[in-house]
Length: 180
Image 1 (cartoon, rainbow, N blue to C red):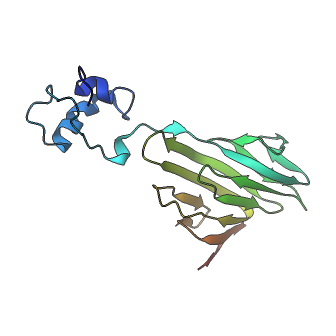
Image 2: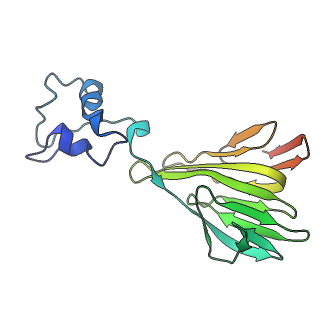
Image 3: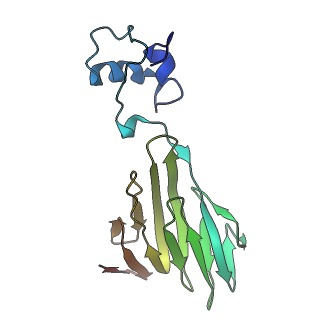
């Protein structure tokens, strides 16, 4: 807390809701929510911090790869709502903000459902929906914070941390393989 600050100014823009100042007061057992002292340390759950859009980056493209229906190129950014598609014999590799990688093999459709991060707290969240095809993922361990990666398919969702895994969707069959 800096001199002249109050909970309202401290939490405005930092937390997911402007009215969270009252939650912060309760969480920190403050007797008077309107009175904070300079140099006082306040604790806030990670979940209350505001989320910001994050992006993955296309690192390699082989063959006919489409991003939102247009030819994908190395360096293109993938954000929430974007759709990737690889043709027969094509593939692409994405790098996520936590340095994990996601490779789309041929004949794959993948939708970026949610890519977000927090400016504080070393948090990155990635959710992708595998419509069809196969992916190969290497999920990096993220010791300084949290960086969950979830792949949703028709019949299953995989959420992993710090491992190598593969997932496929072929018609009504969802396939998964996790390495140790």
